[in-house]
Length: 473
Ligand code: MLT
Ligand code: ZN
Image (tube, rainbow, N blue to C red):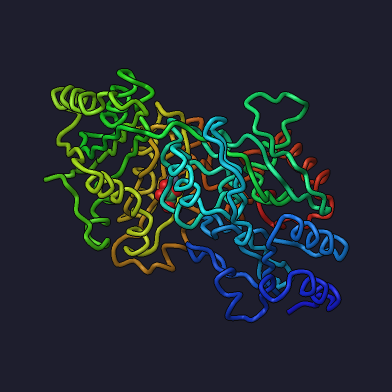
């Protein structure tokens, strides 16, 4: 391990106590690799402060010693955003012990939650108070509030409620010099100069540590309908979305696309993986309708639209969940996609977005281009068609050496991104930049945009101690 001045480690140990600092290699291991196993870093210790004040002291000590820090929440980053580098000097700071919901107010419709609160726990607390915290995605049982805000996570309900940024009213942040900025205001209107709170959302911990946030809540749904549909092609999928939206824009809570290949992986690899369609075909869609009105008539809406689309030949078959359990089982098909892909072998993820109207073209053109690049490659596009974010993932050809396939990752990403660029899209929709995509920043955001980002970074974290090597090239 490179030298960390013993006085710093001693001071951190004295400050945090035995619960607050880990140094045993066996204890460090879970903090050093990401979920995708793209990176394995090294660190002298993991710091686990128990309060904002304690974290502020940690940051002050580390700033004085020029010690780089890497924040970590639930460690579900898809782009290596929360893992230290291989140098062995960067210390990991886990926010897991900052896990209190400080306040919930069903009249203001707000919740003040600390960074380490798990997203699912925030959903449950909101539900108990008769409200909804709508952020929802496969990793919600592990991901934390600090992490989803730092990455501006999206997930399944963006089409209706927006991304994490839109769900945030105020923040508390420990700045790189150890000052605490208390911006925990629960105001719907607050135009008082630069909106600093938005600077930290999506900054992936490169400007400081988000330690708590005021989150927006919504009315709890009283009616919910979920259907799984086999559709004719990509255009038919989008046309179905439009049919629902035209009838009742507020009813669509999620509209998710899946390929037949991905649904096949689910049926094959996930225990109890049942698909309630006789012939799922090549294109499958999940529609989730929800309303806070107890008499919203969502069942009638669902049936009427599906009927219409069946008649138009766009929908080939459909199954509507008849119970909470059936609705959950349909959702499972979509949410287990990343796990099913993992079990099938090596895959390359492309978390991209295009204007919603271009999603069919993206799926088709990117799939064809990748097939030309590597014969036998299996496109597994899936995700949030209703907001334009498709996970344009590619699975290795059957039998190909996984390492040989992964060696082509760069070419595959470039191939997909060429289509994305042509369609006016983004190379990173909801997973962020982390470490994986820093080398694309120059190409995609170079010039004035990147220059301003670099100036902001230099102004707030002049010594570059906050999550070094992430986001900016
Ligand atoms: C998801 O929506 O399941 C993830 O963001 C996508 C992925 O694993 O590529
Ligand atoms: Zn996603």
